[in-house]
Image (cartoon, rainbow, N blue to C red; front, side, top):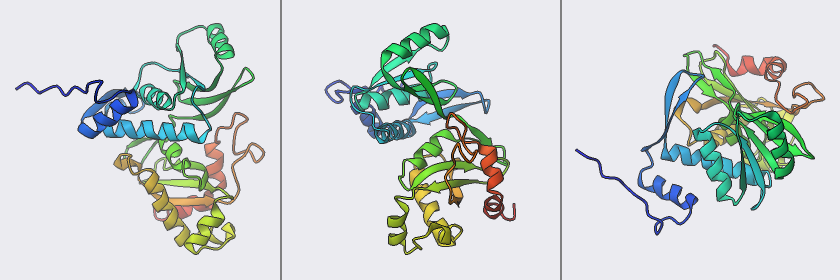
Length: 279
């Protein structure tokens, strides 16, 4: 039996963003992309609903970073679903994509970046970078992966980005390597915490609440809201709070502003023991 083709015409969706919305409305659980994941050695399928949620998170992240219509963003990646999601998010905001070939010569890439006026560079290996005065500064990694005790491989980048879109969280690090479930270590925004604490009946001084059950329950709920469109493996069961930010000066970030994950874990031994008590 031949399955009918569901075609969305230009009269129904005049833009790519509108086309995606209409496709999600019509067939949210239908397969949008199937991609081989080298890290897990498996083919992974994304539904239109999940793909749209990734596009939405990219849009929110770009807006939060102050990108405006006409700004240019560079992408150096092979064809993949992440490329497509970022591209749609950027186009939906009126940004201009500057594509770079992964196999191009370094001098060609440098020439493009020096003259394209791009504010952001997204790199295939998962690095995110900002471009200032002709220099490229690596600011983070998208494709960090941890393996849970049951063998489940969990990519961290999208999860951490989604949680960090909540202004209450200044910094986020998802953890769980070799553990039975995921947890998160967070640094709360000192400007947002007082209002949050007042509304929740918590102490104004974060140090007084750092390990309180009430604060953790509220944060777990808040994190779950940010991850509601993620697959089941992305559930965060515990949250630990750091009272000091992770910075270059205290050795918890690299000069290129990447989290030093192992060092952060070493400084949070007590939190690790508490978050995984009995495991």
